[in-house]
Image (cartoon, rainbow, N blue to C red; front, side, top):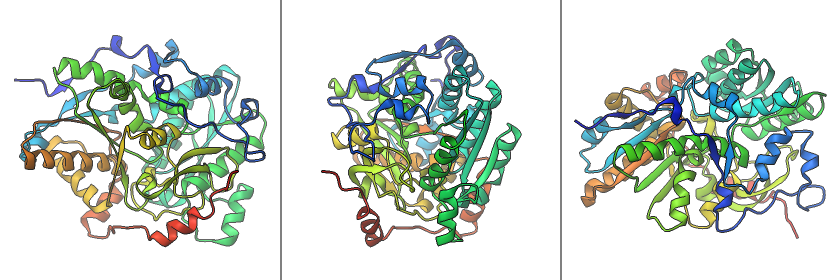
Length: 451
């Protein structure tokens, strides 16, 4: 009998993160200072981010050593299992071999802890005592609260209002680890008050929550901002996922033909995909599929343009796939995927034809999640359900063609704090949203025009 779960030892926790910047055919365009439209002076960002993280953000080095203090905390849950989804294969009647990397084992229940521990560590080194951040579904907010507790820092979390009410148990997780959580938009910041004055019932967005978190950081001494996706150093920290998966695929004597992950800002997809992507760059035949919601189709229907990372235009301009910083996604239950932009490195990989995007409706994703839970025993987060749906589509294509492909996807987190979403699914109250093209065009019309 072949192994269902491929397990590594603590000695196999990666000793270095992998930096895709070293191997991309071309570098991403630099972030721009919105005041001058010139490349951003890194010194200006030191008021927002820890210097050690800014160095990683711009590093050309292929491998960046992981400090032992971080690896010791990683050992609480890493390495994570690689699992053969044999039950799902049987239910689908597919000749495909399906594997998933199970990132639900971290204390907060998702991949986000891979970067929260690293970001808090580098801020601690510089004497920072308090961090601010945003969170959508609460996975990142919970992960940052956990990491701050590990290193004895305080954190302030602006949680997108619709998710604040949809995900009360993730909010409770943040409180347990000492996080101070506020529904966004809030009256605690100038940008929050301005948005509420225009729309008192605003459900919030990640762009708005970012604006509030950045404002809270730059207006207080001894405070820095952190974020759970999009930027290079965040994607860098997540590559422990793919580096472990490479070793595990060797032990399974198999290798993926298709690699999938859900995408909101791009971190869990990049974490699994980037270590494998370096082999595609050198000639190996692998497909990479980024799975996003139809209601927030950043790469499927957005444009590759310079845009702000937040609603209030406090961040540098980044070249990325975007729906426009003023884009307001509907309140779907995959709250972690409700972001208008995409990581610049993921965006460039799409622009270069190295990866592709696929959009799915939320009902079909919850149906995929239900099948996965019934066959593999794990209740996935709604975000992860998009990757599961993508994997099922690939597996059914193999059923039609008779091809015996190897499919690998990232289970970015469990859904044990998402029972309200599942209740709405089973009661028939979930709706599918196909965002009106005219609304997307309205938001895109507000993109900055650069010379």
